[in-house]
Image 1 (cartoon, one colour):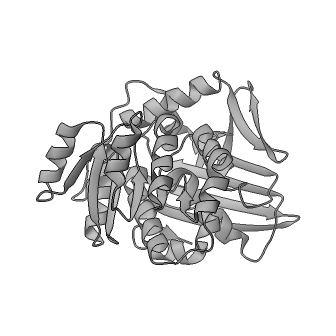
Image 2 (tube, rainbow, N blue to C red; image 1 turned 180 degrees about the horizontal axis):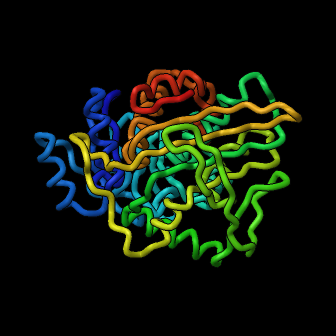
Image 3 (cartoon, helix red, strand yellow; image 1 turned 90 degrees about the horizontal axis):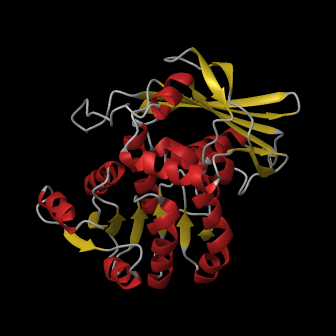
Length: 338
């Protein structure tokens, strides 16, 4: 059915936001994931949505979960484990796949391993359609405007705090293990793994944050999404020190709802600067709760794919497959861009 969307990982923190966003926008979510009991509980909150348990190591269960659906959103990390099996099931079903992966290696694997298969199938596959990866890519693409190339792209994340979910911690541990504890940067046109110590810098965020200290080369999924389609040899990401400390502290609690939508009181500023020669262009996005804002990003992506508002098929970043300025405007008032 044209309006049914499978949410794999529906009972997770971000998955719940995605389910709510789909319902609000007139879609009919199909709830999927590993825990049938938790799926049933969530289904009752919406007067009985369809529940289809599935596990990443059981292709037949994934095929049953996706049968007859119009699209699938994968919100279940670690994506090093789930992304491959779920996108393969989507390709078998011939339906679009969107995920919210922030894991650098998992996103790189998606482009490396599934681009040709998805292109031949004529299926849209959009990885990292989330706060990390997707939003930064849209902002950089919009800031580029009529430029076809740039020398540098800088994406600074100013978070007032970061109370990570268990899924964030689990995905981070997987990424840490995959790179053997090394850090990563995108420089000279390629991903580079290194053991350099973190460095702090000053970043002049626009209001409401203002000047903050950031961790330089606190590398996020943007170093995969942006270079996937833009010839920018240096893509650098930064994280506010407060948020980085929260993430590294094992005692930092999970997010706590602070409003009727279930959002935490965390606010963010994503400040993007692209430089070509002596000219700079800048775009800034502000909003509340990095997990909650992922839901309209992912659901708007599905809506545009299903209604034909796309520029390509196959594995593609947000800035490639969608018109970035128009997409960002569609997120108002959830996201303010200037």
